[in-house]
Image (tube, rainbow, N blue to C red; front, side, top):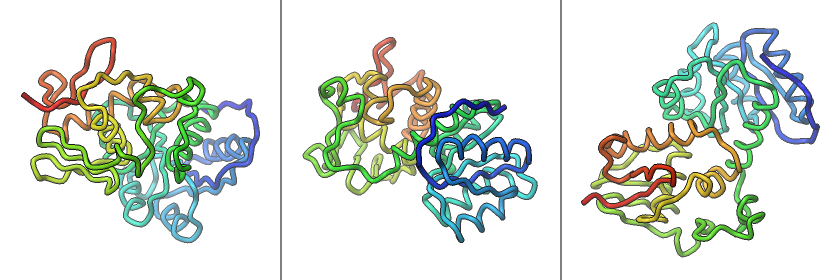
Length: 259
């Protein structure tokens, strides 16, 4: 279900990939009302051709397409483009969400969703993936007068390689290794891991994670939990038996070297 009631401002080129003509039309209308330039595709192969011929700034991808499964389309997109992708899905269990994020999704919305929610998520994805302005604090940090311990801008002193136990995180190279093995992380997983590594042995609150990693004041708790769950799996641990990532109930997350 898509609802309206929008403030218009010029923004980005959006490719909507949706086979249902009613939903597709509604999405085009609501995103156009937000000032976006919207193109559309009704099938997976058509979407891939659009990305190649007319690269958008962001893609809204439905998973239930007539020719290809949306997850396969997402993987194919990642083979030809780094365009941000917001997945629209009715699949809301953790395993499916983790699968989508690992396949290259930047965010997701669970059907039914409002046009306002989708537009907000597109805006958030575009802010996160835009080239960062040098030494610009996040809006939340700026409003608060700066958060103590905030992650410095890329290239600062804390952007050098960080070692925590057998985990080595190299922010400039955007790489992470565990016991010499390269970790295959999504962009958001790496951002979260690098932030926690820069604050190793400190308990980092969700509020600070939202402000400094997601760079927005509100993200559903499930989104952070899904990324933490994916990181734990790739670090070879479980929430019930943590090694590196420890949850301090009611306070936040702490990255420590295993003892």
